Length: 359
Image: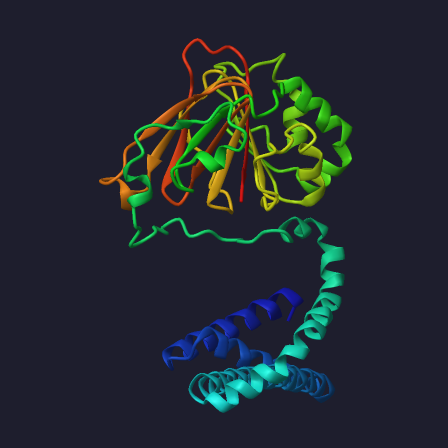
């Protein structure tokens, strides 16, 4: 028989064998295994031994992996159960709680130091995560609403108190929550001066406070904004809105050169600052929510209408008040009772720069 006839005959026999296997309700995988084993035994025992040995090794390797996974799972379960038992013991057994507090205090600093040392390789691999070091809150709760708020501090507020000209404005507040305005208390800062400050500290700002929130998609960093020269190249609708948040010490120290703290403002001011840049036609938006509840705004340039909306819990007790914030104006309000909104001013032509801090 020729080679072609032998192959044709072999194919016919294999097809017949497959048909028989299907009649016996065997799967394709089982049929393939039977044919392979038959061919292996027909061609030689050594090859079969090699394949069998390889199969055994693969099976043993698979069993070892499964064993390791099972052991790790068991250890995790034991750890969780042990942690739960310790928590219950400390919660309901006062002597154990006192013993733990008395002895664990000395271990906190060494433990944190060890954890920092262990995290150094990870930080070197991903240096960008260092921007989260100074965050007090990584994930905010958008559904948080203050409950049982005593609204009496804002019930009698019908307008924002103008305390311009007095030596120490906080002394003239009816109470510490009452919003007030001081004209001329802030320094006038133009957009050009802000750009000059940025380029003077460009390297440091691009490292520590590079991120911005912008209504223009292509402006993702402060470098994108400053290189655009917004004062010379306004956006098509003149409605760009930018929020630049600074929460590290060096950038805040640099920005304080432009926005010095008024003498009557307390020294205990939070590090976090916001600089908001608005074009004349920027639509209404809600101002950022700072870390401290005693918030102050300083208008560097441009004009914005600030509307203090009472929080939801005090909406029926307190009134909405507003003020036109002009350059060098200082505004104080309490964020526990008010949620401010910034609106455009008719006939305004210049870029508005608003500086926000809290304590």
